[in-house]
Image (cartoon, rainbow, N blue to C red):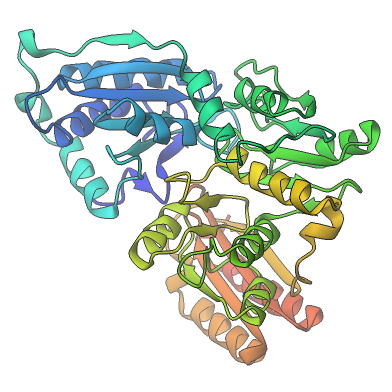
Length: 450
């Protein structure tokens, strides 16, 4: 059944509970392996993971399924998601697999799949794989003499570090910058500090001691308070917060103030536009990006293209329309000149390049626009479809009418958690708050709300 396994970013859930069980992971390995066999060569898969305890279980189950399908598996160990996407192409693999639940707590896990071109799979391919999971897939598996092999691959961290460094001009050095980098006790705990140090920066690395349980725990891009404190403490020029699999980034300026993904996109887009590098006459983001970003780009005669939530949809739109800067407010920044997916480290390096070129502090460079008042609230649900209830539909329609053309309203179910997300923005903060609270109240009153 379509949608039973795959969400907005692969398969995700509580580890050792459906669908994130060893059995499902093995069958995903079988189905993905069979789906990407092409030609007569030895088929290969690159498989990375973050630092969650459950990564061991899911990794071994995936290896079993992939080998059963006749795929050779290159085990990368803990490594960022964008490194997996890069290594799919670099090692001429047929599939890339990343075992991670991104910014979620340790007790969740997920499976992200990449095609041989390094891009996340389309909805159609995911549906095809999903359609195989509940069938007698064993009938199509490899014969005994065609089983795959698995081996650990050395040097992959060095490959990714060199790749990231090459996104900056050869002559550019980060010497003179004191940088605090928060690796969220996740997949970047080795590569991010090393790359920044090799580029000449003075590096203070925090949350680089993963133990299987502390990934994203009160740290990283979703919990930047510790980074803000450390930036003040060591008088750093900038703080960089990555999430558990390092595909998103949040910046902290020298004053300890947070710079979100919208401001990062604005900074990079302006810089690239001025240098003639920006392609497609605009930027791609999601419905969640602030109206202030849209207005800022409009002042430069640039267009903000909006997609539904999920960096995969941002990338698909970028590819279809020839744009090379996109991302999400949460810090997924996609720079397609370099990467096929969000890359927190590479995005941070582009911010650092702006600092070095202009020789100005982050606080001056990163405040590109005044955000329009925006409020997001989540309503946890226990089942059902509250957005299809008549009272909820009426409240949403009334909220849109109240905001009018001076604001926006976005209501959507989360693709990774049992939540309804209610977001409104507009020039009148009191109106925005009233609209959100009214809709949240109506959703909470439905029988499906917790």
